[in-house]
Amino acid sequence: MAKKYSQFKAALVMAKASLIATLRSPTSVVFALLFPVIFVTVFGAMVDNTAVKVKVRLSPHSDSANPMYAAIKAIPIFDLSYGSDSAAMLSDLKKGRIAAVLYLHAPTVVNGLPQFRTDLLGSSAVADKMPLIQAALQEAASKVNQRILPDQPAPASIQVVNIPGRVYRQIDFILPGQLGFSLLMAGVFSSAFLLFNLRHTLVLKRIYVTPVSRAAILLGEMLSRLLFQVICFIIITALGYFAFQFTLVNGLLTFMEMLLLSVFGLVIFMGIGFIISGIIRNESSIAPVANTLTVPQILLCGLFFPIDNYPVWLRTFCELLPLTFFVDGLRKIAFEGLHIWQIPLQLAGLIVWGILIAGLSIRSFKWE
Image 1 (cartoon, rainbow, N blue to C red):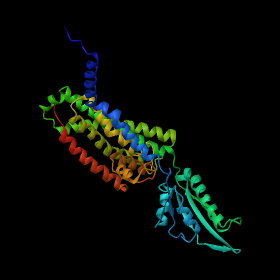
Image 2 (image 1 turned 120 degrees about the vertical axis):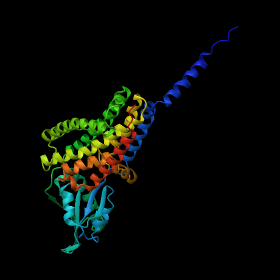
Image 3 (image 1 turned 135 degrees about the horizontal axis):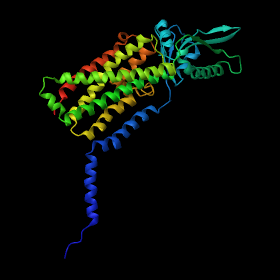
Image 4 (image 1 turned 90 degrees about the horizontal axis):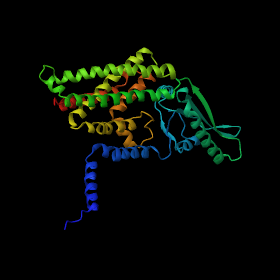
């Protein structure tokens, strides 16, 4: 008598085979597990503990005997520190690097009543933060008044002084991030798929018998992508400048320096694509591997929102990523008017990453 076939056992075998196939699929693991973990980590660290941090500097001549000093120190949204150079602080304020400068006057007595004056220096570059800063200072002054002279004329007062500065618009933050996003995605994905397909269709194997070197192939592909990215760069920047008043401090010179900086970014991001194409054996694995390398940078490098509110350990990691060096450099050149040789930190970071990635790209290159 024939043994009855167990449908349940067959279902278990199918389930086991399907589970093994799923676990072996990079696409499934990356999109089902890795990306959610990355999103939870990033947004969990960002949705924080006392929300926004506003950079405020105390004038080096401020008097810590002013009761407002302790009250201001207790304001949780302030990232407060003493400045050492008044001229440097004013320059940072005009460029939007800090939100305000405070000068705490020494306590005085007028008509027998103590007076505690505080000067608040703001700039049009940080006009969006001034209402928040003023509200916090007024609350601090009210607490000082209630503690020292309740129900009496207010001894603590805030005097606001605005200094001229460039108007900082949202587009000045967003557009450099989108240029970085465009360069990253085009450089990594297009290079990885193109080189893999050339190898898979044996085009590279045919080129191998010619005198063409690996470096020449990589250089040719880089020049092609550079031309394409120059077109994209011009379109995106022109749209931001003419439609949304994107700031180009020195006009055409600023644009050319931004374009020059993008060459460094292109070398790095295309190099990442070359490395992926050299180590991946299956075309279906390119996208998840490329996403694994690009999505964390998109989230962590300040493309869509500042990274100032991240914990110190995460912010330190973010500042070492190549996309961070690139986007920060673009913002300093475009809005602050710095020349490319005046951003040594960003330039050095891009050069180090470029040398490292270029070396790995050549080593991982395969003809077939």
